[in-house]
Image 1 (cartoon, helix red, strand yellow):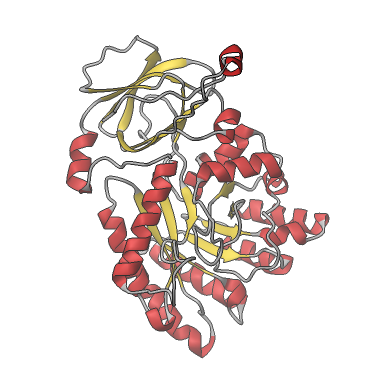
Image 2: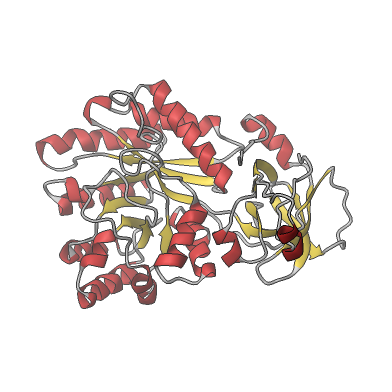
Length: 416
């Protein structure tokens, strides 16, 4: 059974490890080359043909049989509600419980390869700011293992009830929530909600990440008009409702979003509990991409009310985009890596010298095979191995197995 083992704890250990060199030997790249990659100081120091790099590195990992990729990122998680689907009674939102869930969820996603996670956290109601305080504490405890970002998600921002929500949203930003969000669809005045979020974001220089079903083209047009030019940027999702609109209407909406620079995060693995379910359909990814919208893919619910069997696996999201939404495998992986990082405001990653050492090695030879059978994985964050999942496939001894030379995933040597 696959198992993930994070190596190291805390920021001090992470900083020390980042200064050490690590050689990744014999890795295959998506262009077919087999290379050695040397990491140092949290970045890719050199990439050369296999055996060409002298190795002063104290650590070396043999990546023969592995495809080396830029690490994926998770742009749409819900750490405060994760892992609650089988709770025996009412879900607890004490600080300790939320911190435990958010930490465990981030580590599960790290094991899948996501070295950065954006977690949408509900504030207000009876729980106040406690959930986001707990997620921010989880972020601090994960430093050196994974980068966790908190999105403050108020329920209401307009009318008499919304005044408290707006005050709480301001407090959440002061506490350390670096993104502002929410669900305009659930407010009595969706346009007023969006205006309030965008004004606060402009005041504090924060990105915006809003939940919306996207089934109201007039509302999307207003959002695009208000969001155009806002920096550091606006992301919306999961936008499954766009798939239910007539083609010409959806195309015009996509054109407006593209012109405004609004990015979309879809959820191929299912919905999240933040929105009322109106039919589980993924956003029209090909239509959005054709219009010029940057489309990322997230996991959404991780074993909570939104999806009791959610895995939180970016490669599963990419697999679904390739198998069900008609994207080519490389385009599907881009949605969970480069596009996801763009939506989160993170630096670009390439397997080239000078780029951050945020990498994922997956047993396989090409993107299509990796998305189909992504069992064994090695995750690298800031230049060091932070998680490893090893799968061993063996067949019983038989004349048929020997004659066909059936593939086996061999056992790996222990690594750092």
